[in-house]
Length: 332
Image 1 (cartoon, one colour):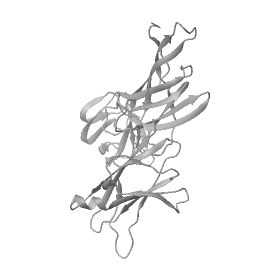
Image 2 (spheres, one colour; image 1 turned 45 degrees about the vertical axis):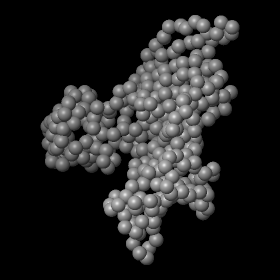
Image 3 (cartoon, one colour; image 1 turned 30 degrees about the vertical axis):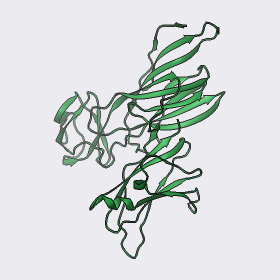
Image 4 (cartoon, helix red, strand yellow; image 1 turned 135 degrees about the vertical axis):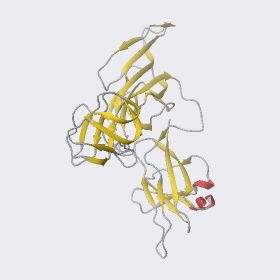
């Protein structure tokens, strides 16, 4: 077998950079790519986790694979340095003779998914939810006509990063230079809004995601590829005679979901109250239960019943508010 050298292709901003290795079987005159990698630059957005909205950015894309099993491993090559959170989904399209299977997974360093294909493409979708509650910068003091902004707590930003002030209407400014663990930043122009000592703001940051394709299937481990669509959900203690009101969670469709990992904790009192959290699955009409289980009596991934369109989180506790955490398990 002969391996040719690496050939880089430099693409435009917010698009992937490819590094392709070709494999040539001397018994077969046709060459087929068996490995490929791409690094994609993205920007954080206000699109919230689980919204599935926004512009998808093309990542890994290869059309001439030798048919077989392949694995894609993801990594966050360069994370934002600002203090706000970020999140990104990978839409993986495995293709066999133009027939497509879609999988959607959360991207983090170490996320891995496998499939059978003769071609594959990956699109990346930011779901950072910048500017939402709990995902903002420390509040700021701004002065009309001044480029200097002072925040109530220190943080770090990269040079040229954009700050959006949630005034009416919102205002966006680039910063002149990066800061490290600082409470003061300098805008590229004077602040044009009303002087205010307590303004909420968020930042827009660039980050890079890497994806590597290789021949073979992912190793068997206890955790499947995962998809996160929400934060913790709270189910309150019912007030008699009113019954407990469950939280209804739609199950994302066309993502390849096969299981769910549900955790339950009590916000007050003994954690034995968390045993009163239970889950039911319903069909798309919402009229028929097609499965149920008690998460804290079932440790691990629970199979999502076929035909389930939603999952309801119930509390049978008479004294404690329960918090539910959910991760979806993806086939692959």
